[in-house]
Length: 419
Image (cartoon, one colour):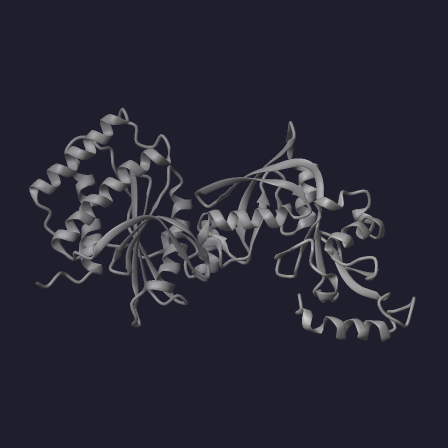
């Protein structure tokens, strides 16, 4: 957009002799044509300026308050000039060095009020906040701030959802309309709560089970009870030592007493129980199956059907071997999320071959179901286990069986260590 000064005099001569020079056929008085885009306006506006009166962007700012209606009566000192890549231009930039078209105009950002905008935003289970000036560039500044705080969104085109009004915000016009009509005004500050969305993609948490059955599994199963049963007893056998089981039971009962025997008060309490099962299973697997196994939480998984952080993923080296979706309640919703997560995992991490396999767990901490995805993305077979229920009391038979099932899945998915 900005050219070198080498061609400046040549360009002036061209302008002097062109039809744009209506006042005189001799330099230095000549007219320069520029395309100006007041940020948020429907389109760019063509402006003609006398270069003998307007030398740089600082001079141009004063002209714009007289020539462009939306900028009238505004303080030109508050104007910010941007090129087509949203880079700020210095106010002393010579306007004869700027080339614009109706497609690549000079952007003018301007103040709308002396108020600030405070935005709380969330993406999946992550949240952030920022304060930005109330200007024509508020929407762009908000998107930039979200990208800074959520690095995993950098490659995506994002927009926002105002859930209270069910309004999608994709541009400056709609954002400014939302500020005036729906934002809370507290003192000198507009306040908003927004959900970050990815254009063309759903987060895992947005999927409902009926959608997954239709769009991800292609109506192969009209209901989950049509899925073949996953027989966990057919998994490779593992032997958990008495000490391992004793330590597991002791830790489980400690957590149970700590929360006064509450098991599903909220998702955070559920995660205490869930992580205990996973931690003991992974510890066993590291010692007895494969020392490259490890567990992560809130790892961002990306796929064509969905994306977002996953509660727990167990890896062996760089390969996903097990996904766990934690829910405070609503196992059906959790199963929907898990199936899309398994689709993304198979898409990105499945081993090559005609029959890739990926395991998943959906659990509230007290209720557990195991899932196995086998086959291609286009024609998978989904195996679903019965639901197991824990009460964390008595002989803990169900609880130790679940621990064993997780370890057996890891054994099925991973090659054992060969010393």
